Length: 234
Image: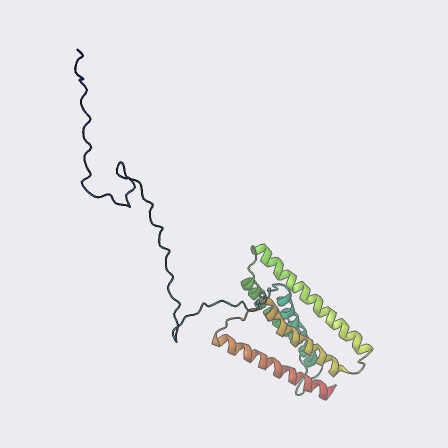
């Protein structure tokens, strides 16, 4: 007679207390996992219509602006200094040879006027050059100032030599025409000098603008008197 089986019967499986959800990642034992529904694609907002409809603004590139002009810290002041030297030489030289009323201007006084006018123009142009294009140091600034004076002297002596040659060959006995041409050259150099030194417009106070205008008016009147004197006395 055999012994009875001592193994305990399997415990019953407890039934789930809630209904399985199809969105659960873990499924109940004995059930089949159901596929998840595909995600709903996002809906785009409708394009507004009517009088308040907006449009996409596309920037339109215009023509490229020209690069700013480069300042010329040596050529510009050289022209300014040369203009003052040439103009004062022509005017003072005319006043030393003849005068409408009274005695001619003494040679020493004429030399002083030319030196003072040239030095003032050289000093102001060198200072403007240092403001627009600051030098590396004092030595460079001093070298620039000497270079400006040197080139201005070269231009002056070249202009006087050219006028002398023209007076002896082409424009013989035409002193008024020669003096007029020299004044025109000096005026052109005086206009181009500051513009080449600082291409950007200079910011001047009201007093500085008034002094500049008065300086041009005085120079024009003096030049006119010298021209009348030259035309009257030859």
